Length: 198
Image (cartoon, rainbow, N blue to C red):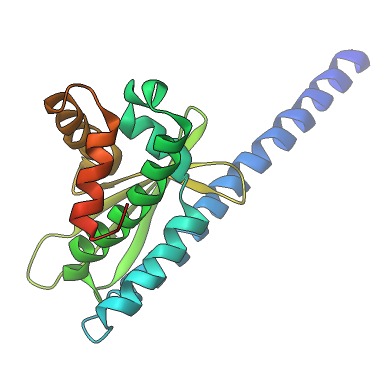
C-alpha cells in the first residue's frame, strides 16, 4: 500500500513538473505577443513617418519571425527547384515585401488599443489570440502562430481570419505558374515592385 501511494505521489510530481513548463510557456507566449503587439501598434501610429515605421518592421521581421521557414512554405514546391542563389534572393526580397505590405496594411490600426485574449497549444506551435480594438467598430482578430520556447519565432499571422503565409503562397505560385514555373520570374517581379536593383 505504501509503495502504491509513493508511486502515485511520484507520478503526481512528474505530471506537475511537466505541466508547469507548459503553463509557463503559455504565459511566456502571451507576454511575447503582448509586448510585440504593443510595439508594432505604437510604431504604426499616425504621427510616425513611413521610413521609421518600415525600419521598425524590418527589425521585427528579422528578430521575431521565422523568415526562412515562412519563405520555404510560401514558395512551396518551387523552393526545391530554385537554385541556392534564387532562394537567397527570394528570402531577402520577401522580407522587404512583407515589411512594406504589413506596415501599410496594419497602418490603419496604428495607435489603437491591442490586447491578448488567449493562448492555446497547436501541436508543436502555440497560437496566441489577440485583438485590435477599434472605436465604433468590431475588434480585428489577430492570431499569432509561434514555435520555440523563448526565444519564440512567429511562423504565421492571421489578420481578420486571413493567413499571411497562405495568402502569399497563393499569390506567388500564380506568378511562377504564369511564367513557366520559373522562380526567377517572381524574383524579377518582386524587384520591380520594390524598386530594388538586381
